[in-house]
Image (cartoon, rainbow, N blue to C red; front, side, top):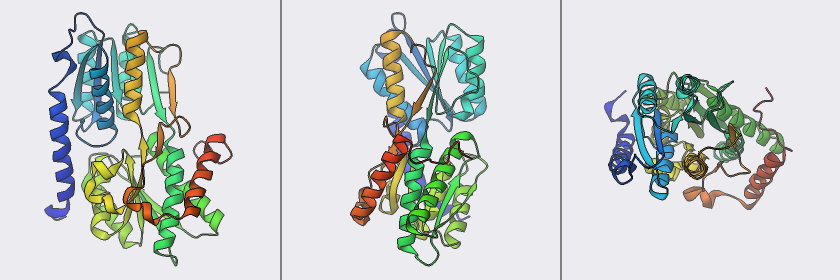
Length: 351
């Protein structure tokens, strides 16, 4: 691939690096005494806090909590899986009261640490172990619900763009549970559109081998464009940025993930339908606020983010707003209500 394939990505990354570096210089330990306050640590998953996705969202919620509540805060970035284990061990050795990690890649390490340290509280954001100990709280997101809405929207727009052979694409990370929620919800939303409108939208996509491989995402994005995709939905971390860059170059529309990607990848703003978001920043903030006020989180050890409680949702339509018809807006609201009250199944858990 030509070295010029990722100029927009590089610019976006530099902006995020600058922002994260500035925020990291203001660690709560600089102005709160660690001798007199609760100590809370945050460990990123692979890639650190500079990517505008779930790691960066967790960091934003952590920083907001650090300036709103009295506790000693310290965050540690993980470049790879070994760093995750090392960073968790660091906080254990330093006697932190609560240790927060992000993502499926952290699951094995935080479960091990929680089992070995029953007097320390642990929190796992965006993943859930099968049998976690009582001192580990997990926060999972029913992204299949927002992805279902995304799939319906993608199918509608793919039909508008190419009524003869509409194709909606996706690019996923490795097929972990959280990735499967995106895929199944998205594909089910397309199927729901086809049934409701006698449509014939095809949905096609590929998994990738990791979350830090933008070249791989770019190659898959180009293939989907060559196959006629009008819309692409990448849910693959930094790898997904490669797919977005392919969409930018080839004139495909896209759906963002985790955060509102109008802001995390502004070069793509004019070609984004919406973003399928997880409000991880609010989750981390609320978790810390509860912990600081109560010294724990009670008996509930698994928390679910849904459309109903606002932890998952569609981002604003921004530049796409003018393309929406009143009928489509009403359909999306009807679907949202149906998912919340259980009348519409997203496909997740039904396979």
